[in-house]
Length: 326
Image (cartoon, rainbow, N blue to C red; front, side, top):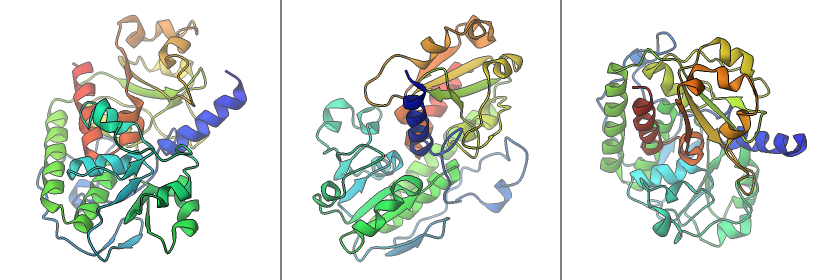
């Protein structure tokens, strides 16, 4: 694959998973006492504050959304939206994500019935979005904020940008307040918090790593930049820090950290052209990484791990990660 195409994929990945190594920012729902501490942070509380239905909500980014009536027709331009709707017992009027095809969401057959917004993640077509007569459109701020002027007056646009699981929970709570599906959100938050707290109690002493990409120019998913990666200091040794959008780690650095378990997100631009782990195997240093030598490299579903970012996706990440870290 050419370096030019790789650059496009990496920019797309940085938007789709919003950070860099990947992902974005969002809404705190955690008590103040849980925000201090080291990399792993304090233990996760399982108590869930009641949610009240509301016509107006303000998220952690200061974005205020008002709905005259509870939104029913929602178009998703980012997978977090699909995840939240699934937790609330709803389906989008249209989506540009493949997340719902996962068996823990709708599954392939039911997901095929959801209309797809043409134009892809980076350039969804405004006319197609509006053709579904949405009450609400949810997109990623960094990527879809440019659509706001074209949608103004026709529908309500909500730009989201999660960087932590607390942000994702905050967005879920806000959407539940708007839609009136408060009990569903409280139950979903409770499930996730309980699962995370259980995983923390069984924290592994193994060193883990999540990498993403399409070819040898891979990235490392780091806490605060990648929502899923933010869970890993709580459940394993995860000594990886963000280095900015263009920064990453070399194979040599990864080798030096004695990684025990490797999770690999293959990101494709258009059609799939093979697994990232298979491409990295061409590097002679790859075989020397303990995780590779011990057959502890796991290709994971990037729709869930890199793009989902909601409580259901993150619950799947925890299940798969804990099984691999045993």
